[in-house]
Image 1 (cartoon, helix red, strand yellow):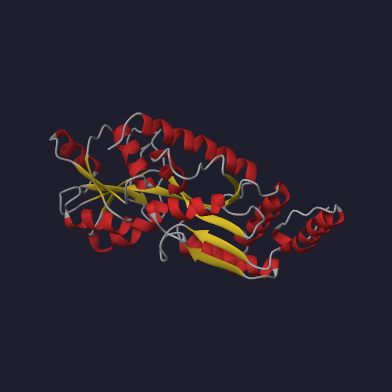
Image 2 (cartoon, rainbow, N blue to C red):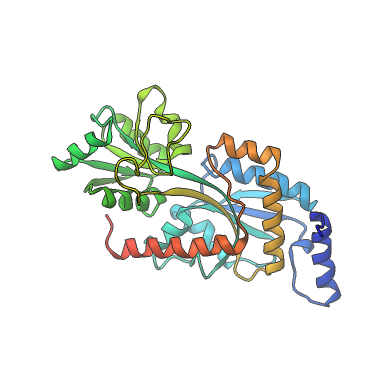
Length: 318
């Protein structure tokens, strides 16, 4: 038997009230704050603002988005980890949630121990973007530069997902670049456009605008098959590297002490939101794919990913 979302929310609140528990939950909060640990206007913005708007409608209370950038996302993330687990403060983040902590083992949070996963809102595959100005228009051009010992890769910053994925992919392809660490994906792409970097490994969504007019050249797609928007860009598997795949993700999290009942309620809400007509349009507009995972499946994915990035860091990174 299926129950409506509002009925489920009411039932959760009544159950706790009847049990005489003094523990606060989402139903008892007057306002919900979603912390984004990055500057406004980034790749997370379209998702989190749409999510906040729809959650506000479903929950019947204000849901506010607050940007708290700093230290590559560590500042805002650590604040949520230390905050109350009553549903008043949640976190919306991306792949650097894991890579930042892997690069800085002494960071003020542990992404696996200090948080519970709620939902993953989308995956956005990576591409290798070459610099036409530097003569990189194909993967073979990049291999030639590498053979000559003068290849340069830009990243969106130390500990960022582009740093980790870039190094992992470079290793798998046999590339040994000198690395330019910038402060954002936009700055990293500008280095490629100017020819100061030969390539950048970035997500389709963040990189696509820079490919217009030939400013950057997509030379390899790191997803399955070919991307519909870029039918001429070969996949890694086509080029003989079937194990080379990488995606950026966007996720919704709560402090570790939050109840499973609230986590599951929010997971169901996100599922309803993202599979709605408007949700599907947001996903399409941002060139991502939504996976309707429950919280446990997302947690298992987080555990595996974090272990992968920890191992990469332990092996040595530039």
